[in-house]
Length: 95
Image (cartoon, rainbow, N blue to C red):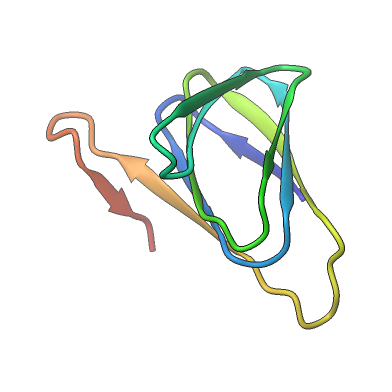
């Protein structure tokens, strides 16, 4: 699945099988709640373990591909795009 994010746009990935994020353009910040931050740039990838949730933010206009590992018909993942509220510093989910 291909996604495009503008600078500051946030994407939440959650549940399902293991995921592999391939950054095709730009740079993406990733946090999984493990106390560390990750940044991937064009040409690199990040693997999200099965059942984990990640929050990603485009540090620059970015294109990424989300590969689902070992997907079956009963597999479900959630992808939710959020907008960065530029003045308040908080995140608001888009409808």
